[in-house]
Each structure stands twice: as structure tokens, then as C-alpha cells.
Image (cartoon, rainbow, N blue to C red; front, side, top):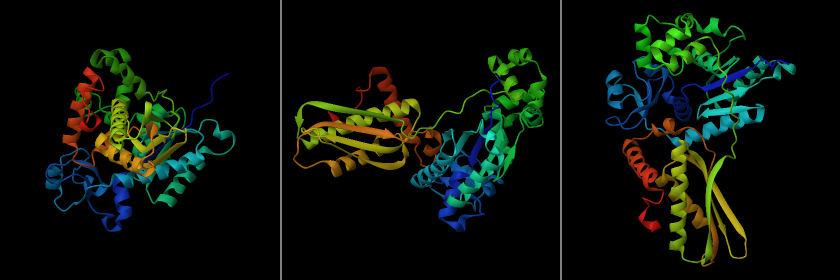
Length: 382
């Protein structure tokens, strides 16, 4: 029996970081706006469509962006606000969609396969988009297609704040006239290489043979040919808020030294933060657990701006411990858990001038990889 035709929706919050800033400060709306670090040494994390007209784009040095548009408004960015709005949209989608994947802080895939038996998936997706707009005030674009790749490309074509559908069986025809660099994964260097081969559009890629493309581009050429035909089999990976990393320590004897307990808390937070960075994930929630000798267990958690940095997680963990701990009481077990994990590391790191911090953690993690997680620890944990 043939498998049902897949129906995939791709949602993208348009200029998400800029949109959040404009909601919180309406006077910025309609102006060339840059979200990023310091004007001298920072980088552009995001920019409005008005700023893009001047040639400004994400990851551009702020100094260069200011030369292109000296009158642009610049805001540093507030990670906590972005996390709040991202969670809000996630909750709306989770309440309605049977299966969805949160690909990043502002991007979602919804698998609507089989829904056509009960109602019109196209109208259902339009209604969901409108609900998100009405509740959050955020602009959002989407596209409906038979796979994730075509849906993503079509969403980019529907921007800003629009939507479209690519009928099943029309994927190749839809992609053919688009510039080859509209394909995710084709960067400036690959695009220039394709141009030297006489390839300008996705249709040009599809018109070549897989053998030709393999000769020029290796195995990637074969994959590129398949994608240009509109073929893509990647599944929508179910999103689970409960996914977490945690660690805990049951002591050989009950401990009453607050200094010792805090040193253990710091050590464990460092450990699981390292694991997050290894997986290139960030956490949006942290919890601390304490168990007393009578086995009574208490825990407390709080939402945080997405992060995987020790120095941002440790103060929150210590604050939770202070609120939980019963002064003078011996402790049998202590634990730390990070949850609401998401693949958002690159995006959120652009909002602050974190180049030095990122470099420091990269060096620390390299030492830990080579010599073990205990090779470098904070002085308090010794």
C-alpha cells in the first residue's frame, strides 16, 4: 500500500529579532534598524528589511554596517525577550499541530500528512499563522509543500509576511527558475563555482546529469542534483520540551558545609554546560534539586535566556540553591538539570560581543576534550 503524500509546512518568523524590538519600541518600526553589539567591534545579529536595502546583512561587522547606513538605529538586543516570544509561538503551535519540529528560535516545520482526510491543510495553516500574528504581533511567513526542503525555499520566496503552496508533483517546475543560491547550503563560494560551470538557476542544475555534477563537485554534486529535482526525504523531528541534560551526586555522608555544596553545584553545572556545547545546544530552563537525609526532596526551576555558558548558568543555579536550601540542614543529594534544549547557539550568540568569550570557551573545551572534563575547573570546585 503506497505511503500517504507528505504535507509539510515551514513557518519562519520574519526578521524575528527586529520584529521583537519593534513590538517593544514601536517608534523603531519602518526604520533602518540593526540589532547587534557595539558599533566599533560588534557584528550585525539581525537587521530590518529597510536596512537590508543598504547592503547590510547578518554577521557583517557593525563598523562596516554603520558606514553603509550611518543613520540606522542600533539596539543591542535582549535575549530574554527573544526567548519569551519564541516560547510563546512554540506553545501556540504545540497546542494545534499534531507533529512539529522547532528547527531554531524562529523556525518551525509542521508535518500535516493525513490531515486532508478531516479538513483542508492549506486553510488550517493559514488560520494558525493568523492566530500567531494576532496573539504575538509577530509577522510570519509559511509555505506548504511535499517536503522540508521545498517548503523552506518557498517560505523564503513568500517573505515578507506572506505564504504560498507548492502542489505535490510540481516541485521541480517550481524550483527551476530560481537562482541556484536560493538552495540552502549553496554559499557564495559554491555559487561562484557553479557560475563558472554555466549554472545560474536550479533548473540548470537539474538539467545536468548526476555524473557531470559529481565530476565537478564530488558527492555533493549528486546530492545537489537530487535537491534541484525537488527530492528530499528528511523527516520532521518531533519537538519535546522535556528533553534535558542533568547530573546529580549522592554523598557518602550527609554534608552541611555550604561552601562544599556550592562547589559541587558549580562543578555539576560546568559539566552539563560542557555537554551542551559539545552538542551545540542551548538551554532555556535550569533546575536545582536537593534531597535531605529523611529523603524529602525539593526542587526549583526558572526560565532563562537561552545559553550554554558556565558563567551565565552558575549564578542562576546558586540563586536557586539559596532559595531552596534550609539553613543548617545536612544534605544527602544535590542535582542540576538543564531543559528546553534548542539548536540556537549561533543565532543567540550574535547579539552580544561574545567573540572573546566564545574563544575562551572553545579553548577550555578543547583541553577538556583532550585531557578529560576535569582538566580545567573553577577554583571554587577544588
